[in-house]
Amino acid sequence: MFKRFNERWEVKKITDITELKKKAIDLRRDTLKMLTKAGSGHTGGSLSVIEIMALLYYQRMNIDNRDPRRKDRDKFILSKGHACPALYAILADLDFFPREELWTLRKLGSRLQGHPQLGLPGVEISSGSLGQGLSISVGMALADRMDDLNTRIYCLMGDGETNEGQVWEAAMTAAHYKLASLCGIIDCNKLQIDGRCCEVMNPGAHAKKWESFRWHVIEADGHDFKELQNAFDEAAAVLDRPQMIIAHTVKGKGISFIENQVAWHGIAPKKDELNKAFAELDKQRKALDG
Ligand SMILES: Cc1ncc(C[n+]2csc(CCOP(=O)(O)OP(=O)(O)O)c2C)c(N)n1
Image (cartoon, rainbow, N blue to C red):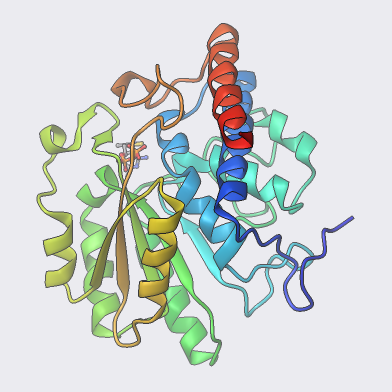
């Protein structure tokens, strides 16, 4: 039933960048299909996080689909919970739960709700109320340190999400406790629910802010696997403070008519739009196959 990849951790590792790119295309397909079947959900912000999450899940994290709550696992906190279709696509692909369940997204009684809920294997926290994930991550990093566990905690937030004051309490706490096992990522797609971040509530310069909070800051193209690899390598080498990767992304990445459109924040593709999107993804796949 489970895919076996190495002795210690039951995780499918993909090191080849072309293979990762192919995986990203497959994940976009599943994400879009899920949303279309549900008839609602967050398309733009699910598509912008695909490469970041694919790199973590397929290459970096120690996780175990036979024992999702295993104590010494690395933890991924999807603080921008509305992007959960991307998370579900990955967890199903990694056999944390049956793939058929993907098509129950947002249905009554489904374990795959419009925001992640504890109870679905692989989901670390119930999220959706923005601003809370980093505080929870701080708690997890402190707890794992107390238990002498050599784990990494990854927390993915939206750039709009950083409007929440609680984020900055967590930022201060993580630096105070020198939580070097904590790596935050901001999906910096420059849009949020109803407009451009700089117009709704301008967060200013992300990098300078996190640096002033005594985090190690790294900027990267959030769709470029090589840059992301380098960013996560650099982060892992930091031993005295938390790290923040500011990942520059495009909301709706991969589908021309969804990219950079605020209107696609909280709607799902209709059937004909899904077909158009699939045609674009097929083209991208062919280009990779050479
Ligand atoms: C506490 C809270 N306030 C408001 C919302 C409604 N909301 C859902 S998504 C969103 C925009 C978030 O923007 P961003 O973090 O940039 O996400 P992305 O654009 O990447 O989808 C808002 C305000 C929420 N989920 N939680």
